[in-house]
Length: 172
Image 1 (cartoon, rainbow, N blue to C red):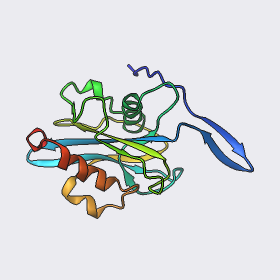
Image 2 (cartoon, rainbow, N blue to C red):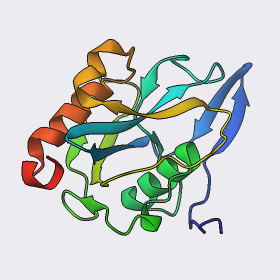
Image 3 (cartoon, rainbow, N blue to C red):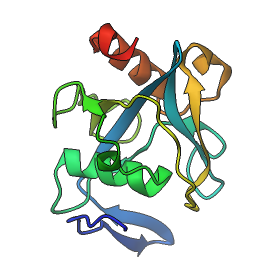
């Protein structure tokens, strides 16, 4: 059964032949770590050709819609982009409950004025079969191999930051 979300999507407008969005300009980022045997993996997705930064890898991410909290937005974005509904995995844990582990307000970084990073630990994660035109592929990537991938939005740094902030006993 598809989960019900309370969001009201951002609206798209055309202005001088360009697409602009009426949005809250707040991005959410989901760092999902899974331990398989003795290795740590992070859930990442490869951006499709219709997205900015096509072909690059990133964490599940997107904008907060109207009428939703940051927590609700990150749960929704993870689901929309990967098919993974976090509440189907009852063993997942979050570093600080429903709050982000990192808040970025530097307007020079990426495009957002604000980005909220949420972290999850989900043992023995399996990726559901899912289709989204914005995403070419979803996979678990060994955190030690992150430098081998072309990663957008400094998301490799977010992964490392989450692992450093997490009680290592909960993921290692």
